[in-house]
Length: 487
Image 1 (spheres, rainbow, N blue to C red):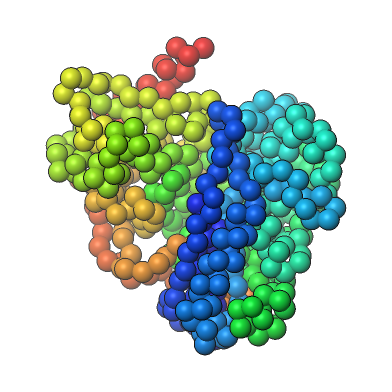
Image 2 (cartoon, rainbow, N blue to C red; image 1 turned 90 degrees about the vertical axis):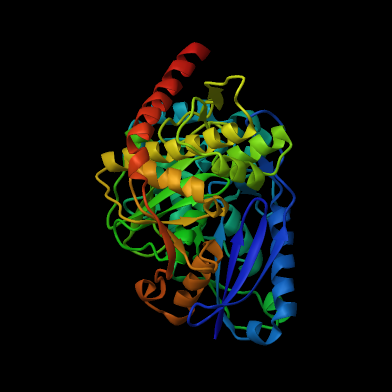
């Protein structure tokens, strides 16, 4: 038997086919049309772009591996979280999806918290513009004609599930990022829904990520040469899916993700919120398990931004920084290009360089960017520790993990070993393919979600510990000073 994982991102879709042992058989990708930014701080995308990319990716896989696709018994879905996909009574999309990194609803967040003082106790999270509910509050206020037509609100992967199966269903990890879920109880909250004028009829049915959600429509089973009884699992939000891919299931196990955004992820055996530190406390994709995340909005995106304005390739910049590295320099970078979540919860925060001089060149700027992201992860670690969380060795995932210097900076600042898996795909697509296996076979997730073999381990540099402690103190002092000056 084989199992298919579909990872829906804002830049494209990846489809991964695995066997019962979890070994990759084949993969295919398809690009989506890039998100648009109609106004500063806004970020939107047409849901049809995800669907077209999904069909293209699976079509490619089907053509390349017809015999193996015929053996598919389970499918898992992963997707970028928080996006507000608004549907009318006929399941037609009402407007472009408001994405995870859209910051327009800061005022609505404050209004929601003022209207329900117990919001954080129920949701386990601060009301942040990136979450789904404040986006709906914004639509209610600014686009009342659209709001009046809303029959369902789906997250991106739930929208793809609807097209694949005909059912409105979501799972716990993704639902945790809506601000409508009682995360401790793993159920929709009537009180939170009421804040946006919605009720349970507007929400999809909830299932666990490793449980069956619905069957694949016959037309798609036929299109891809599959049997008529293919099960679609609940799946996972992108970060919980990555945790399933690298086997971060037990308390204290986690990863650091150096992608467009950055995530410090740790699994928990119970619900452990820390709203004061803007920690994300979510359900995991498997039953009776939760996780915490510190989330920074511009990780590799910060280096991509620098590459764009200097006219250089990000990998070239990273290589130049590594070649000339001698420890922390004068330059310090705050990576708040899209605002920030953990620990500041400030959509209006902005990035900045300080300590520039005539000797500053692109390589030193790149080093400062990489250090700034490492310091942002250190901020995340600090508030996760405040919540009573301990973490051990962390696995590294994401495109930025190809940089040895970046990993050394993170390891040194977190004072933690960073492990690199052996060659292979251990991302969201693998994680949800594993969830598809669990759903189809009733397998125990803890037996399926094993950790990969480790290729090598990046250890903290003890010789740089004091220097980076001093630099981190300067970094931490800059944000409040700059925010005060901006008032």
